[in-house]
Structure formats: C-alpha cells, structure tokens
Length: 363
Image (tube, rainbow, N blue to C red; front, side, top):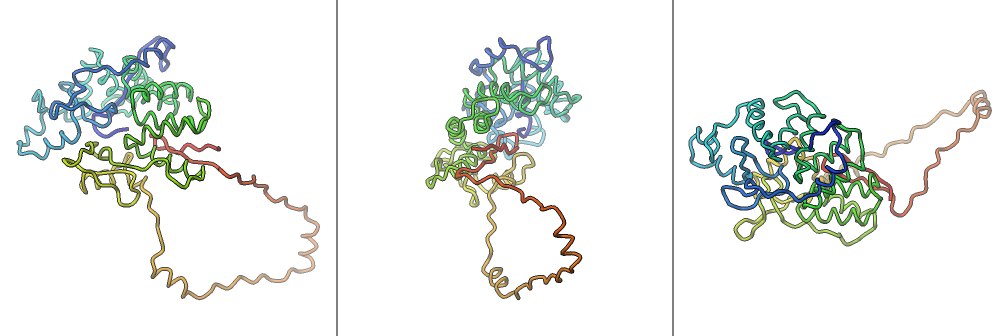
C-alpha cells in the first residue's frame, strides 16, 4: 500500500460479490480516463498513473504532487493555512471517519479515484468496518472505468485471495490491464507471474520485458528481479543499469540541471533528491528501502587479523566403541542417505513483486 490518502483502490458492483463478469473485464482494458484531477494545480504538470505517488485532497478531489505538497508544508503560510486545503480552503479531516465522510459524495458521483480510495479504506479498516468484499466491489467500480490503480489493486486481491476466490489467472488479467497503461507495479507483478508460470504461460523472456518496462520507471523490485535473473542465466553484463528517473521517496522526476538525483551509495538501484528524502524512505515501515537495500557485510582488516590470530579449535575426540555398541550398530538397518537433485546450470530464483513477497520458481 502507498503512504497517505493517495494510496487506495476501486471496482463494479454486480449480483455476486467479489467477482467480475467477462463484460466487465472487457471494459477494464479501457484507457484511464483523463479527468481534470490528472493535472497538479501547483506546477500544472501531469500527475502520475500510479495514484500512490501523489496526494489527493478528498474535499475538492484535486490531486497534487507530493513534492509540491511538501513545498506548501515548509512555506511561510500560517499553521491554520497549512492545515486547510490550499485550493478550496476546507479544513483537513482530523480522523479516518471524517475522510470517509468527505469521500462518499465523490463515490456517489461515480468518481473512479474516490471509489478506489474508499476501497482502500475498507481493505485496511480505516474509518469503516474492515471488509475485503466491500473493497473488491469498490475496486471493480473504478476498474471498469479504466482506472489503472484499481486494476492493479484487484490483481493483488485475486493473487492473495482476499475477498475473492484466489485466482492467478484473474490476477494476471487485471495486472495486464494496468500494465498496458504503464503502471510500473502492475508490470512488475505480472512479470513475476510470467516467471513462475502462475496464471499465464511460463516465460522468462516476457518476464524480462515487463521488468525492463517497470525498471525504466525506477521500480526497485523490477530492477532487483532483473539483476537476479541475469545472475541465474549466467550473464556477465547486466541487462539493465539503474539510472535516475524519479526520487524514490517523493517521486520528483530527474530533470537536470534544475533538479538532479543522487543514487543510494550501497545498492545504487534507487535515487533521491537529497539526504532528507533518503532518510525518510529508509525509515518507512511499508516498502522502505532499509529492507531492500543490499547490505554486503565484509570483514574488516582488524576482524580478519583477529580471526587469524585466534588459536585453532581442537577437534572433539570420540570414545572408542564398545563391543556391545558395535554389535548393536551392525544389527541396525542401514539409513538411506537423502538424495539431492543434481544441480543444473540455471538452478532456481526468488523474485519479488510489489506485495512485498518473494515469488520462487524453477527455470
């Protein structure tokens, strides 16, 4: 899940809860609607396809880039002004329940983003009684309008079997609908399904193509998956070299020379505006970089010297067997040694999707 009010989901109601008809699946492939909220009112630049990368004001329904919103917070505005919508001047909700009350009118008007956000709140039990079934219904309402974030979230629901019967096939359909719109997380998850042959025909080639598309948008899991796939295929030259695209914390794009990003010094897979963004991303509980960064611990010279100077450990001496023990051992049935499968050149792999889980498959 994404941080803040921007991260939520959506779907279409029908007679059977938690399911979608084939007719609905056909409409789920429609391009994402270009509404007035698709442009940030501060910088007048287009908002991202991934709704988890920008904030949404539930009062007036406007979306705003996270870095533009952060700029308002650190401005010289008064405390009262900072705690009110800069567009409609409505006071920000003080609780999850108040957020729900602001969302419901937008849901009734059929706004896909509102259906998706309210679906998230039902999934997480924020301001409402937790209900996966109700979350799926709302996600479907938004997904049938072509809302990529809702399609991606429905893919997760079907993959995990939350509020619906678990189905990799249905998960793949929704991931593909969102992936066609350029949704990086959906591309990453669909690639993991292709690599494992779950819900779709197994194909390392298709998985690589999907991960390449997501990696080009800075998706950290996709970059890691490509590195792992290169390793298992024995490639000496990396198929993808991470490059600055957007800040991993606030998602501000790399636009030199006005705004240049710096890579993480450890893994060099993600980029940041500066130390402040790096520290925030490192400490995030959900999808924080601390749990993903490669921390290769190498022995220091002092540690190596201390180990070399340590006295050798004497091997434990076993007492000679008595005649009775030897006879008993001879009479016991032989223990079969565990047979291990011969190692192949390509072995197996563990690939990560955006749900935070490792998906394992054999080549």
